[in-house]
Length: 151
Length: 151
DNA sequence: GCCGTTTATCTTACGTGTAAACTATATTTG
DNA sequence: CAAATATAGTTTACACGTAAGATAAACGGC
Image (tube, rainbow over all chains, first blue to last red):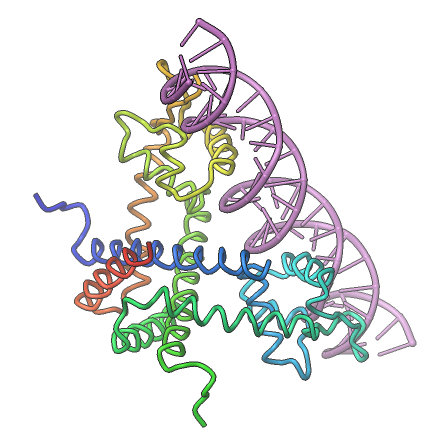
């Protein structure tokens, strides 16, 4: 009764893929909903703020930011506009290159980001509470090496 | 030099989460792009077709479909409209409930779906080629149990 | 310095996601 | 049975994703 259409390796690959998509999708949904409810922000904004916080002394140009987020440039314009309207970031013309802008996290953004990050750590921990810590380490390592070989 | 702000468990949870998001995001992007290039379809449509193919004898109502895709009802209307325009599916009024519609996969949709599924199996296999098959089985099991405890 | 090319960002058009309000039909309940 | 409520699907408004083309500034070769 074994399906013969695909090889065993293909079947196992598909199974892993499906579980991976389902699990990470569900996890993302949980975190996104929590961020919305508690902070009125979503994962994209959290991602932007976390990159900006890391470089809060110098800021980042829009292009640099786009590169780190693996998002397209066209999209980021609108996202930053909305975040600017909410005063989470600042946008200043770059002196030595008139095409460019420097994006910085604002004081308000920093405050919100820190609260989000702390809560996020708790929520993630809760969501992964069923997993043994050694399994976690093993799986993390596994994923990071697997990801490198995707390129 | 160890960061004291978060517990070890929190730090490991965050690491795993980040790797999970990055890896599955990248994988999804790869598959989505391949589906677009080779079949002019994307993952959402592939997902819809795969659910409809499974029930190709009876079809599914829009609500049932929405439930399986974990997508909101509002969104599915437009998606199905576009797929209907491309003749991948059919939509017929349900006899015993005038509010409902039955969605079926069309012959054309079935053909395209099968080609997509075959290619998808190959692409996934390729993407996961660096992973040992025993590790694959182990992680599949790990993910499916972890997912259950998310609810 | 001028001209063609590259770069940084924006704009536009569109597909897809959510939430909330709306319409039409079914069902439940007094 | 009539009124209240629930359900199926659509519509609307908006956030966010991509791709392609436009614009302005910077760069590089001559």
